[in-house]
Length: 210
Image (cartoon, rainbow, N blue to C red; front, side, top):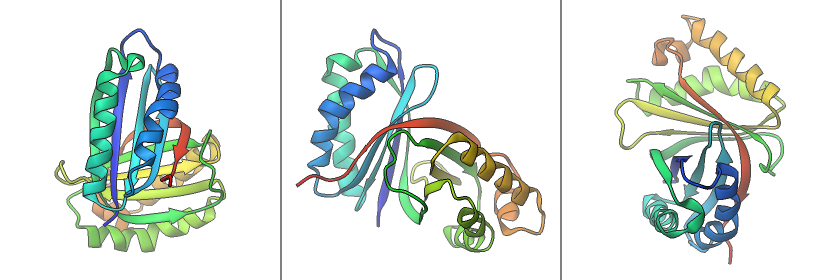
């Protein structure tokens, strides 16, 4: 099954997050793009000198290969001196939505981490009933990926890409309204609890080469 890995870093050395992203796009991305199991590799910038990557592969084995490639590069490249790996989120993707547009460079990124004891099947039900109608209404929504963490108990991660920040804000407001509706399935599986949110700007995205 398609596997997702999100890695979050802090640029705490002599180089800024933007400088590291430039180096990653030029040096690391071509290495990762040679992995035959790669589907998409995305670099993004957060705030306060934080940055990260999101990797989508055909399966866990391919994802582990890309993680090793990334770890080796971060550990040896001059540009990443002092960079600190803060967090890794990974798991099997069980839902994907393709909206408008395909070029993610410069798009607005959004990661929402939910604590939910519900099963993947219950999430599917909530997505079909409550979330997909909202996705279809938001013209600025470019892509959604949802996976359950393979390492953290009861943790679901929703990744979104938008044409701009306003689109992201509108969808977030609509999702919150659904969560506040006690009759919604989404409210039931999340307990109405707010997710942990990380917003970003997508720096560049790459597909498998060769």
